Length: 88
Image (tube, rainbow, N blue to C red; front, side, top):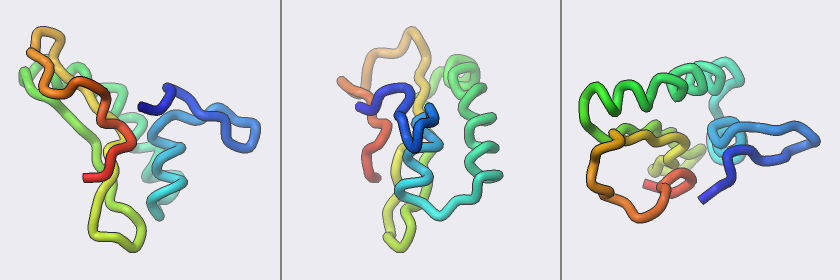
C-alpha cells in the first residue's frame, strides 16, 4: 500500500496525483476532479453500503489502476489490505 502522500519533486502529492502522473495520461484538471470526487467517496460508500473505487486506465495498456477506495464502516472486509496502486 502506498503512503497517503508521496514526495515528488519536493511537493507532497496525494495517491491520486502520484499514481495518475506516473501511470496515466490524465490532465491536471482531470486529476483535480478525481481528488474532488475522492473527498465524497466514503460518504457514498456508507450511503450505499458498498465498496467504492476510482480506477483509471493506464497509458498505452488495456488495464486500469486503483487510485482511491472507500468502504462502509460496518462492512465485513472483502480485502485484507488496501488495493490502491493495484492494477485491475
